[in-house]
Length: 554
Image (cartoon, rainbow, N blue to C red):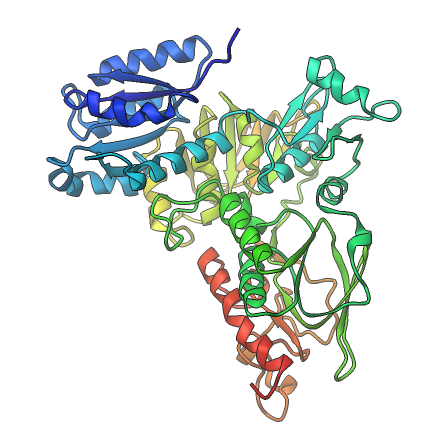
């Protein structure tokens, strides 16, 4: 029996022949269906879902006979929340219909407004289509080809953490049960009795990791690859947007550059399902894709990445000598160091909740876990952009999503475009002046207790997922005292450094710390904006300062 291909449903009362012809290039990988009305498309989508199939995208003309196109998308979204939605306006209607539809695009009622192709090889049109299908494929569909296989009898915390790491690194992966055909093949190649989960990575060798770090080292190289005799021009600690931008600009300008990342490339931004306000990506871009593109760009210029290795200590070099970064896999020496470790989400510190981390409780958006929440009720705690992006992504799968915030609302902490999308989304509600104070379950999360901070009233709610995005704590315990920090632990740079620590009555340069040759960029820096674009900008801006440090005569 052949595989069931996902569907592309065209809603086109007047130009179906032209659209079917355009979408003919996708027939190898998708079933393309043409309908004339919203009702027909709705009925067809329901039949496909009832038969166990998937709808990847709805494509509609801007004028439909039986519903306004935004109403049509609302009805179709109710049937298939995960499908991407695209308006392909005929050239006779493109300019006339755009103003009225633009507000709906900003609120997330659909994903793109495009001009229907007027001739062959309209690659701008198809680039947009492919981007949307790629986004759907990476967040909804199971991969057709898996670069890594995980064998596990059930969803446990480590299995989910490994899947999340592989997803964030852009490596297609699937999880198989031990008694499946694929699972038995993986286990047959294992040396010894299985200890689950078992992972088979790119080299085809199966092993039983006890941590995500072991998977990272197996996929991206053993510690022996560090050449401790080499003195690098610059070592960047952290591969979030700031660290990646610093790597691209430093290596493109000829500096020997290494990046040390303890977890997955991309940092917190890499967990975002869709960043819509990043310059140059009008249809948005997922954090994973942005991070992997930046990583590949840096590698092209010669940057070396060491993924899965935590820096445990920065040992300052004597004047004229390189700094030393200590890791479990060896020491890295560099004449300049850029701290770009970002932040981690603040812990809730509720014992019943902490015991279930990875078992229905997640710090961060945990995109991988979203698929596990189909038909469930979930809670997102946090009022920042990351929380808003997580809630929107979860709403494609969960029956309901509740955003809990301690403030009176989202306006003070979240971008307006996300607030608009949330307000429109019928599956998302915002509960202000609330906090989670307890939770539990048999083996995984089943309930939480929510307290109203105004009245003190506590309510028990049955939920399957709790996603905690509680603000930022810096990861700076590995830094020496010579690097000044504020009372919250964020690294001080430039004029934020107390005057008693200035040199010759002059503050350090804008992104320089109190330790010569050491710089800080992105969210770890005190006073940073906590936005992806700002972090990227700081990563680029630090490179001229590094140049000046390495060669004071420039």
